[in-house]
Image (cartoon, rainbow, N blue to C red):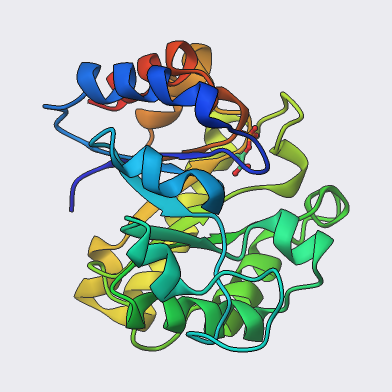
Amino acid sequence: MRKLAAGNWKMNGTSADIPQLEALANDHHAASVDVVICGPATLLTRMAATGLSVGGEDCHPAPSGAHTGDISAPMLADAGATHVITGHSERRTDHGETDADVTAKTTAGWAANLHVILCIGETEAQYRAGDTLDVLTTQMDGSIPDAATAQNTTIAYEPVWAIGTGLTPTPQEIADVHAALRAYLTDRFGDEGAQMRLLYGGSVKASNAADIFALDNVDGALVGGASLKAADFSPIVTALE
Ligand code: PEP
């Protein structure tokens, strides 16, 4: 499985941002790693037209229906998406999404042939209490469907306290958590779990990317703030190559 540099634009992005995505697509069209930008549904078609791989930031578990304001996985695919994020901590917090919701959304993403980037992560209080691995295990038990494979799923470890804060765990802490996640995945999914990509996310930027990517079991990154500008994201892609 190739490494993955994934951006998450969150509630950002208008048509004025398309030219810099074109530049990003041009700079990395022959990249030896996968590059995906997950963006707002309003922009996906135009983002996909740049030639970059694009993804949704969330999807509804149902393919269609009376759910005002929601976007389904088939609608994302129709707009040109090849990926979708599920379980982002901002969805878990802002929208009260549970592990069961994440399971349903992940299954819906697969049904629309989307590769799912499934996020897990502990809060600051849980980190301080030393509960990180227990929390992550509970989230993986509850939110990763049994049919997950290396082909259809990437797991993103995103400590909630590191998202958008400029704080990161130490490299040793990231390495220890990723080793434990790999052990879990291999134990539960066998070879598929051994091959499943494990991203780190949380305040990744050009200045820390190389150190993080050098760690065992770090197969790429999910990047929020530093994915908004091609000039910030491009060196992160290069660091992963
Ligand atoms: C994210 O939103 O997934 C994220 C990791 O954000 P940031 O890179 O800004 O911390």
